[in-house]
Length: 350
View 1 (spheres, rainbow, N blue to C red):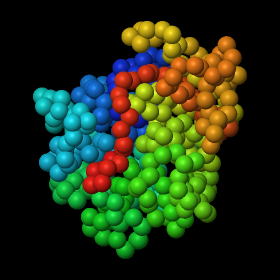
View 2 (cartoon, rainbow, N blue to C red; view 1 turned 120 degrees about the horizontal axis):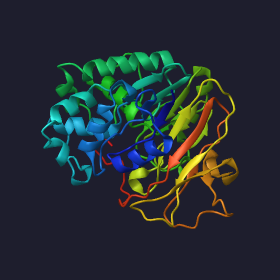
View 3 (cartoon, one colour; view 1 turned 30 degrees about the vertical axis):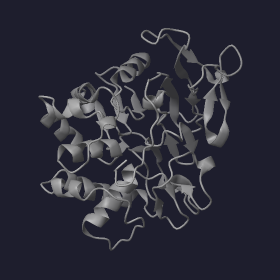
């Protein structure tokens, strides 16, 4: 039995199926955990939800901001945009069971039998892991209740930006959900900043990645957080966190981490699609650790096995150098034909 955590799918079912084939995923015993944003802006929302839901207890996903936006639209509270590509889902005969299943996903989940936890965006610096689980349960209880339509009606907005234990009502729930599903940067005092979505190296002065705010020590949580959400961050390893959104929707790849709690140092392999092959039937090859070299900001790029960087323009291959107990990283490098768009718009839960 193997446990895999897979980055943001965004309704791109074909790359997911290729990745699972490359992993030799066995639905009889293997388990899949997804970092959220199963749907949103991708071409196959109905098929993607049917497939993952159909895996039953062998698949779990946390909620992402695009998942929540789709649910809000379905409840009549979110403003649907053409780029959301939700029409097929909203018009599907089985929309109700699919949306109900999605609405009952957690915001934070521990991978049982390991020291890993999965969340879409992250955990704000004010919370330890125990409080994060308490806040996640608090919000998901409302999402799964008759109050859900009212919650979706009050979901959008960036305020409050600072956590206070005495927050109440919709502002309290909005902060909790924003932190788990939208957060990227924080200020030194832990205030969330929703205005930036670029890589940390390009952030304005005074902004820090949520996992690297002054005084933050994710290693003290005792677990490693695995997140998605931040495609311009890519696949990186920081103390106590692994990020997996490698921009499948935007022309990048879909990335998975295989977890093995028995080993502390493991070989690293990248499953890559050869760029010279047909996009309809690409060939995958395994690139060993010798084909991976360090990049900027703890990110890694996969070098061409024959020497040098892969010359294909517009495709960035990300790997992960891990000293912890993960057995390896596999990335299905699937090129998608989607124009990159800005994630965050005023008034949108993006």
